[in-house]
Amino acid sequence: MTDEPSPIRILIVDDHPVVREGVSTLVGGQSDMRIVGEASNGREAMQQFRAHRPDIILMDIQMPVMGGLDALIAIRDEAPEARIIMLTTYAGDAQVQRAIKAGARGYLLKSSLHEELLQTIRAVYAGRKAISAEASYELAEHATDEALTPAEVRVLRLIAQGNANKEIAEQLSVSEETVKGQVRNILSKLGAKDRTQAAMTGVKRGIIEL
Image 1 (cartoon, rainbow, N blue to C red):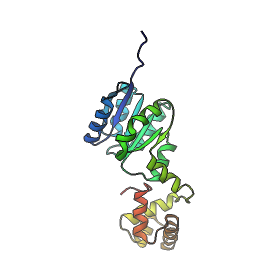
Image 2: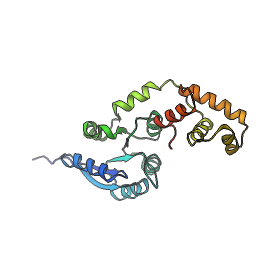
Image 3: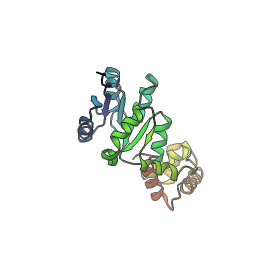
Image 4: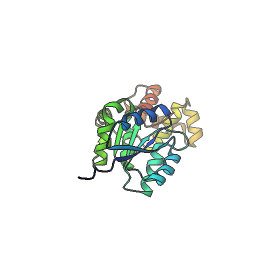
């Protein structure tokens, strides 16, 4: 009689109880998986990770106290072998890129959890990377785009907060002409016709958060 393999030990990190409950229900029906802990923010995730050393962490990107990307970086600094799958509501390509660069092994949209969660967990546990189809499309669509510089991202964030060029110049201690040039570059790089569209595109693609 052969021993059955140990189940995949999973930590769920999400600030919405309904998401944690949904994931628990999906995973609970699988003989090869087991939930070993839950957390509602990145700081709790680090505590739970240290306590349980799970095989897989399912981590929401946007959470209070400490966000998923910061927690991902902190956990991987401590344990480079940690296998983390990021969960998000949006397929923004900038968020996907940041998560993958930071060492995420998977990236899933919450809208596709029912279809893709279990196979993604098994794929990442087996050593593969897994990105949801919709997020892959976003990455491919913008793969050749010229990225915004850090200074342009700061300007875009201030535009989204409703600041005029003069106010942005004052806040960043640069000339209004400099800001105007940066705004032109932002519109061009994002393919936006005006400031409002640029801000909306920035949020949609995960370049900035409101």
